Length: 74
Image 1 (spheres, rainbow, N blue to C red):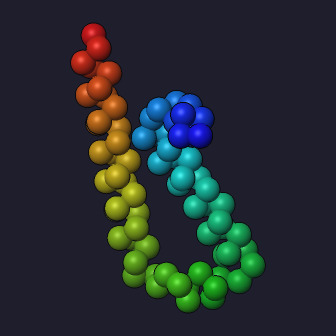
Image 2 (cartoon, rainbow, N blue to C red):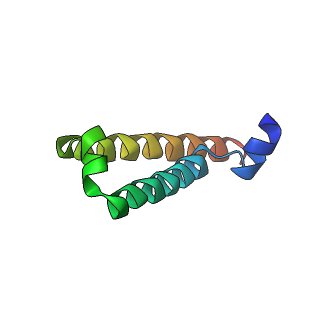
């Protein structure tokens, strides 16, 4: 099963994080379309910049890790 999951993401952490971001965007978009106060009850507005920074840092770490791995094979 783990092999199938890795194959779906092409063994790339960057692709995994990108697809996770898309999924989270769809879920949060649905919450916001239904009732914006539902989202605000769980995540206060002041935490949104922290989330954006954290997900950006994680994506950059994954991108650099894969770029380093690709360079070793050449």
